[in-house]
Length: 311
Image (tube, rainbow, N blue to C red; front, top):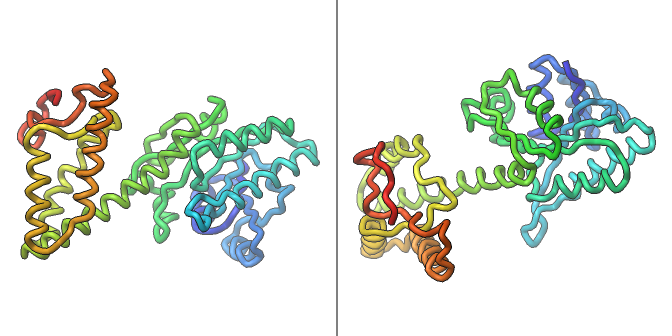
């Protein structure tokens, strides 16, 4: 049984606290909001001050990271939580290799900056990124059952021992444990949400097109969902799509959309991005990119076991 501190008792923090308590760990909750502290106590958690939190072996930072006016990530709460931990450890002289786990969504490079601050102030702690992948209305359920949602837990750190210890906390969860660098872990959270946003926008775009063509969009997307389970063409070095089929079908769908009075902004964006990738590939002509495009010779729907031919 581990002694775990949770900083922030909002959607993420409460899910982390409840989930790890259910696994038999001892949980201490810290929050600057007095009402949330009372709520934590009402649910049977140990309310703790910052000094109590520093006595924990694992400390999960689960504070908000809202947008600034310019859209950038406001790290004020994460930094404040971390600074409070570091300064308290230094003051008490109890820095004994605590593992500080950043659960909040933060830009790549944040954990490295926090770690450097700890090193500069000569405080012995480990910093690990373990981003949350939780739906707001199902946070506790998703935390306890990651296999029913995304199926994985991502842990990124600088020291293997710290990463392994955090992974040990998740050993009884039915999930794939991905151990990686902190910046990869941080970026994976953004990419996951961006992909969800893309799928939602794509589905909405297809729905609008189908409505204008008097086609049931749900039946169409139910067919596509079978293919999505195979996660085809998720490759950052795949290059542009070329050949006959994909460019042709995209052009024809754009023309069809125009004929029914729909501008299809997402499909136009798909075409624009592909054109940009082609221009870059032709200009750079990099060996790692050459021939990586998807061509008309690729027809996974007909033969899913066929080796992909170069475009």
